[in-house]
Length: 121
Length: 110
Image 1 (spheres, each protein chain N blue to C red):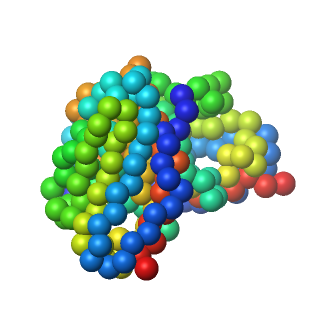
Image 2: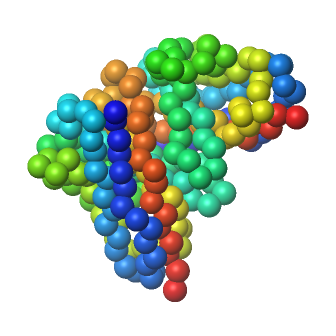
Image 3: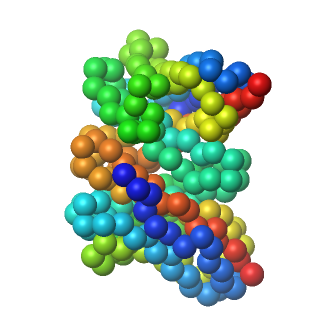
């Protein structure tokens, strides 16, 4: 069965960076893209970006441009998201979710369990 | 890209039907047949309910149905059950390998 297993909770100080991971299993890794989505406390879901399985094609949400980098490691079937210059507004639960090229409609069909990132001084 | 517009809350009694709207523009919801809907219970990841505006993934109850007219998509839940109480989110492809979510709707089962 498809599983996306994310790394554990993180506590960071303002200005620091965080690198989250999402390990995929149960499907052909190179066939699907991966999205990252977050939910801040009391807020809705926010799309952060998408990466193709080989890691050479990414698209980031405009508000995160310059602070986010998504990468993949195909041999371990793992996708990473690096977020820099953290502020309290980055405090959220971060999810990875399986994706496609965008034309199939089957994006976000499977989700990781979420990783809580807390940014606090 | 602005978030899609959803009502903040809806409510209904067990057995009734409710509809949640999701309004976008002619550049997203109205342009692509790529609206999805998700159910989100606190502490759990979102659950994939509807895709390509109207289709249900395997295993999703027929009580959940999607529709679209112009720039507004809708999710209807019929035969409301207590376990349907959750937040519901729409999401649309907006082109250029980008997506946008709605602000979310809290469903209360009275």
